[in-house]
Image (cartoon, rainbow, N blue to C red; front, side, top):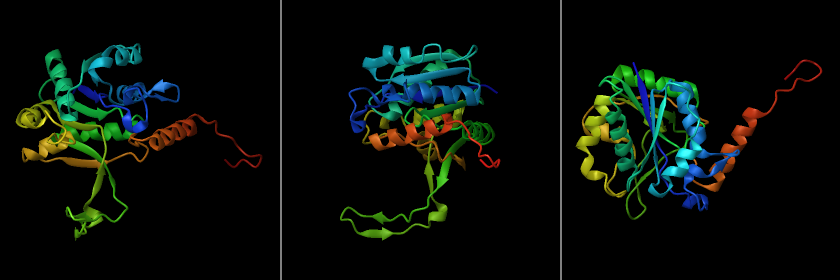
Length: 249
């Protein structure tokens, strides 16, 4: 089985208060997109990585990824579209055009905004996608969630035991992902109508999507506070382990 990935990195950095696209914002001295790409390549033994970049920053994103992938993984950077769904479709088209994957091979779709995803979570997604056709990582919801109407009135309180906060990468066989994007193509032109994740497009086909355990450290970087949290997590990883005189850590 071969594995390719589409890494969406076409978002703006406006909510971060940055003049740079989010993918190029520095995180521990490297662009966010470099951390995310490295995590995927290391975990999934990719044959092909396609990164979708803001059209005006394709060259900049390519430079951020220069020399990143080991031998055997092809890296391409393509312009993203007007919505996340359109950007994924552009990346998927590049994967298909390469001719490297068979219909049953796996394509991961990951957001550069989650640069700290761990290898175990990625591998769980790949294995479940290969077995079931579609798989997503999720975390149990610990807060009580309310459904409200336009006037702010509570209309329902769903059982949180049935809820999951969904992350990326999401994984699909090439055949399933192509069918889902072809069927949902008319939604992609505008963020107001576009699917917020690829599993939603698969669900719209009536196909099964499996959920595997996600990664609590795979925080999504949206605000400056999220970026600061990701910095702290990386610094914790890099900190040396010290042992007290009595032998306790």
